[in-house]
Image (tube, rainbow, N blue to C red; front, side, top):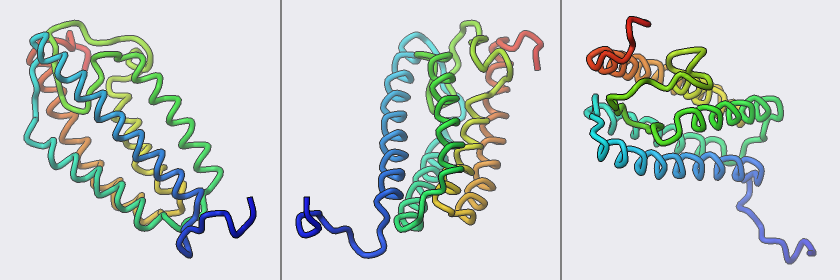
Length: 181
């Protein structure tokens, strides 16, 4: 293909950054579809949702985070070291999703069934939240956006604190922690 035949990007746009941002967006959309399916199945099995009032705020926060990546990172260089860290986090994501299976969702859904105690859940109580904390910080750093990492890490810290309190209370209410706090 000659240079004349290659489609041109608008000046300043970095194809590597655009590809990375597209992967992040596709991943998040796929997760939302999976979460929606799992939530419907869990509710059909008698599970109950807790803290639904905060969910739109969490979605808005994550949407703004992605829009910030797209707006400020579209012309950024991809940092190979941070990309390697991000890829490592994706391996953790797969481990978490495989461990929870049909019980993974973006909402706080409690099923009257024993908690998952395999995979990273045998090592810590909330590995998915730990992953999200790391991703909110590392993903912008792949694009050199330390300001986005800082702002959204602070916002995310407040959101995670709120969610963990709701989730822990719901699990305790259902007697699912068995004294293990």
